[in-house]
Image 1 (cartoon, rainbow, N blue to C red):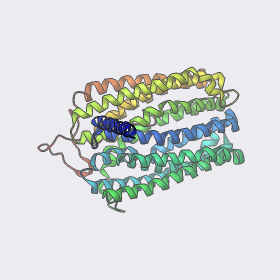
Image 2 (cartoon, rainbow, N blue to C red):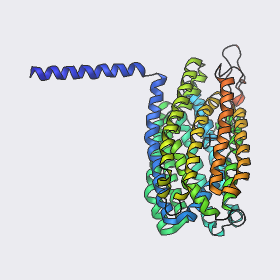
Image 3 (cartoon, helix red, strand yellow):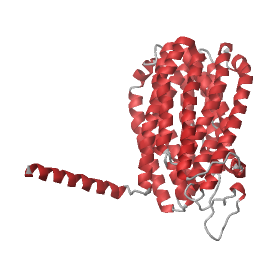
Length: 485
């Protein structure tokens, strides 16, 4: 008995020593602990949120074929196009300012949440109505597919739900409620696995759109209840009215975000619309859509691991902690790039077999997946740099960088898509992300690394005047197209 007691005591002592050693690197209230907490929950939620739709898309492609999967892809791209206007950049706006102000001004945080939700609902409803009205013209004259009219009208409902979920996710990220955000994303992903294939089997593509509306609405309902509970527990009042006092953020922050997205998403939609108008265009679009699913999978881990970084960087920037700011930024860039390379390399090696899972006719275009995987590595790298720009409020700079991406992508698409179809579109993504990564690297190295607040304009959001005597000026604008950079 004494021998067993001695072994047990030694084991307890070793465990306690290990815990103390780990906690020395992750202090309870330290930035490392907050980062690790955010990454862990982002990985859990993102694995289910990304894995569910990926499995559902493979089953869907085998049910409806390459042409049907191409039609599904162009509908999703159209939703993204109108979603840029509907979202107004409010998700990123909420993340940026809620993260900065949560610990210093909870009353203002509540007003920002109220403004984001009300403005988002209004703009989403308006854009959904516009999409419903122009659906006949888009189906008949732009996409050359009149039979997609019912799907396009279902897409208007999905557009509204997507925008609300995006704004809610931005609010939860700003509150650093990573566990709740992971649960909401997981709910949506898990529901997609059974509902999308079953709906496709019984009702075809219109049934798929209806199933997506159901899964997104369920996630939105859960997120809204969670936001109210979290704010109540944190002592953040959310007024039904009064958010208009923060409307200055719409101009100083959200408007540049909107313009930045408009320099990216319409270019993507135009290139895909150009692709479907080629010979065998919808079949080529189906191949590109299948490869694009795995492009998102390449970006999955880097994106999730860096999700907590934006609110943390914004918080450090608001506290003027330049040392930890630069340290966290460098760590994020290294981890993001290495993770993206580690994921993309095996995908490139087994690209032929991955594409074959989608059915006959897909495996011959394995090179599309290789090019998109390489583009995703550059995308992840530029996204990490973009978070530095977001956190310091340089909205118009982000707009300029994204405009460079958009123009280079448009030029490549006009030249390559008519010649090489889906392969040309994938090559356009790769070249444009090369240009974007280079321009972002040059800007961050020259302007942010020496001092992130060196040349920023003072904060003028919500009618505030800069106080030059008490503290350095904090900028109030930023922009970044998260789906692409």
